[in-house]
Image (cartoon, rainbow, N blue to C red):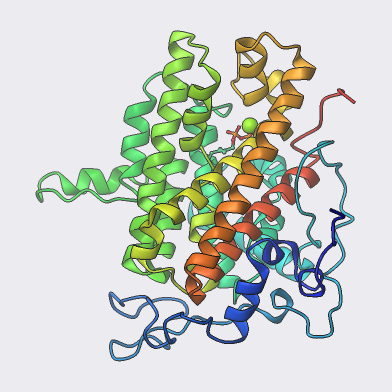
Length: 414
Ligand SMILES: CC(C)=CCC/C(C)=C(\C)COP(=O)(O)OP(=O)(O)O
Ligand SMILES: [Mg+2]
């Protein structure tokens, strides 16, 4: 049967929205879906107390409204095509399944970049002068603005940006190339985790713990970024984030344990480790950054968890593909999917890389199918907006990897 091509509705939506059961999504944004709970009955944030960003409309008597996404994320009634794909530099991995996005708003990028540098230098003393070039080259402002186009304000964007910088500081300084090592990593990570999930102890020992949070840049960054986040997010959003960070730290530890013993994992073992050592804590704050909340019981549903895991896995394999040459040139063996495939399936470097592209593409298709199923099964506004936020994060993450030629370059396989 010939492909009928995109429907007029699909053609008018940005890529992320167009993939999420377009009809269901568009209906939900325009009016309540048939059979969906009326807005006042729909599952919403049960407030743990109004505090922080975007909570001026929260009261115990009235559920928090789900703010509409900005107009550029809604279907265009005139049917105009979505914004033009980005012309920024960097070429995509050939054969990769991804969705191009428009370049992020340059005014927001500049503002976030300025504010994050002030935070890094003045509030957490993150890096010595000689690392400035790498900090700038990371382009975290461009990254976060691309991933969160629906953030209502720059303050909201800063929540994600500080956490992203802090997460990378821990990875670089504890695990990887800025003084990191697998040796003793468990102790360092657990101590840093207490900056996110505080120690509750007897008065005698509390001051020493409190002092420890200022002892190095990763802990200062975690503590400060989390402090901002906790003040803006709901208690359950903060706890969701802590859980995702515990998952991340467990992934770092498995990778480190394998490095210490020289274990080359099976491909499935690698994929399991990488599901934890994963970008997951970033897309799962899309609602807090968007100024609304996906209620905890909807987030906890197995279908939602599957969507999140697949999205995290696809975004993380994107990193394996774009960082492949960087990791090949780093000292020792740096695990990534192409390296593990080459070793375990006795493939050439090129064939292993191409197979990793296929694995990524299959993960992306599985993510999109699972998201569309969930959107159709549970068409409440918070779920639909969250799904769109995660899909948008996936696209923004690819954009950042593709365009970050300071950090990444492609192998010469084509
Ligand atoms: C931002 C965040 C939660 C990161 C956690 C895990 C992480 C650092 C990645 C998924 C990126 O992978 P990798 O360590 O390989 O990073 P680079 O390739 O060095 O950019
Ligand atoms: Mg990498």
